[in-house]
Image (cartoon, rainbow, N blue to C red):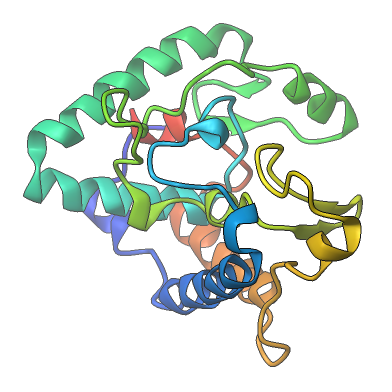
Length: 212
């Protein structure tokens, strides 16, 4: 999947700003309640190692962020592209999906293959010199929700570096939750449907495959 043209960049729905605001507000509230238990700080790269799947809305947001960076800091943007192409070349041969389109396969068997895939690969958007995300403002939803307690079908999950010494009750009290009048999952699904229709591509991909 080649990087986005100007037309595809315009296809990022305006509602994405609302989605980001909802998620970031919930994150800030969880961080406030977590205090020193939440050790996420600039330069900590625990969550930047190992590939993770992103949806087409995340990909469009990253591409738009990179396009903006090319206008303000073209050398930095160029280095991201170099790292992304290098990552793509390392991953393409064993990519559990269509390497040409960058879309991951779906289904239980594909998910199992993905669990064992590229767990040591560093995100190409990470600046190796500073340990900072070069596209922090455009980062995927998964990056915005990693760290504080987040509920899934498996229970509450947290970063292994955080909440050390906290009891289960204390961790639960720090759970990342959104305003009950807002549903980020529903909003994201609607925005994702619009993006997939506009781009003519559906399915999950990787950061490196939408940045090269």
